[in-house]
Image (cartoon, rainbow, N blue to C red; front, side, top):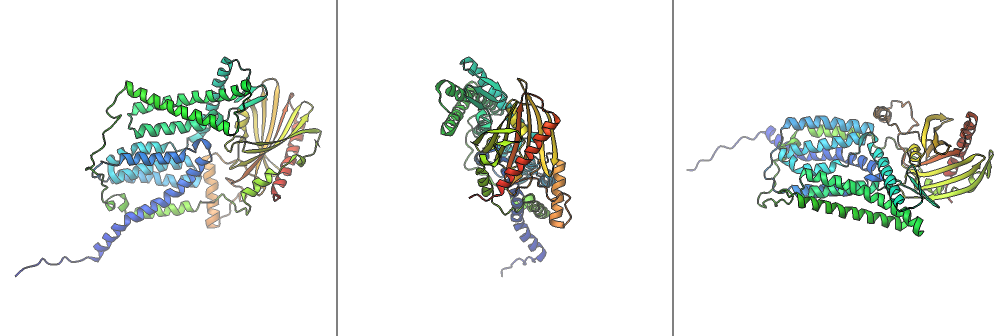
Length: 544
């Protein structure tokens, strides 16, 4: 007679908890994706609008390659200390909420990095976090620099490129002069802006160098040294590039400043820089051999195994609820600054393309129009991809009214005029008859005086004010819009927009040999406002 063990009583509560515990990781992953994906869109759009960050897709590809190369051979992983994971989430998740509310890609990117590190540690402890640290470091270069440091770096690179290329032109005995970031040669000026100064290649070469060093598992000191050598090589290559452009035009009458020739010179300089970086890496390996330089592959019979997911942070019951609440909060801010204009940006730009010389009179309040200039530049140009400029002759100088388009946001012209050699003596901002006007008073060597007024409007012809740069100002205004959108609380500034999709910039620039009197400046401001209205009305017309 055989005996059987008594059947184990089934608890509906315990079985229900087991079922919930089995699907909690899936809910956690979905909720985490709902939080992270909007931020990827925000930061991706922010970076893509800045040409020197457009290496982003290559960096993401490199992160995946480095992470995949570090994954095998870790063995059985164990979850990290839940208290450390909880602390990381307690800091990163509120920071993400605040960053989304204030539209701060810097804070949001930093919070995403902390969230990524906390998640990796929670899944596999220090072993997994250490293994993924190289990929994490490569990802970190996509976090925008704070306090406008990237813009300062751009200007510094332009100045270095201009100075070094000028020295080379001196050695080659090429007649030229330097004004700001402009190399002036007889018959042609070369403005050393982002494309010519190699700002794009600077970021790209550094990203490629870091990826190569991490992928090849170079030691930390080796990696730092090869990055420093890459930075120096890029500066030298960019100076040589600007020198070649100016020398070819001046000595051989060969125009390499635009079109496919310009792209070919830039691409050649970029490839040569990468080859020199690889040579520097090989030279360092020759003098400094390290057992970590060429690591042996991990044993194939020692596979990486994650712990049971429900035993990690993905099995925490409150976490999907917290992540879902954060995702809904972020969703409430999506499109909060975008107005439904009902007019495609392409139509707006097409109307601006049709601006012609007849928009302004030949004689305008004593000014005599002498030329109308149509300019097309690279999309990344600091002066805008397109310009329509009306030039007038003054008794003691010249005047230029220019429509520059299209920008994705309010554009600060101070940077451009500093780059061309003007020193800003005074800057002011005022709302004149509903038009937000920025005014600059400038000087230049040779007793030259410059006066600049500029403003912006969008595809509906509505004024675009300067974007708030203060973190707390942005947070206050976006929260006010959030409250107005979802809770019906009136917004004190219902017509102001923090961002715009398509923006035209209008400027009036006067260059004179004397200081303008207050009355003359007031008259110029009146003509500027009249010019803005003419261009704005023309932009509202449907293109034929």
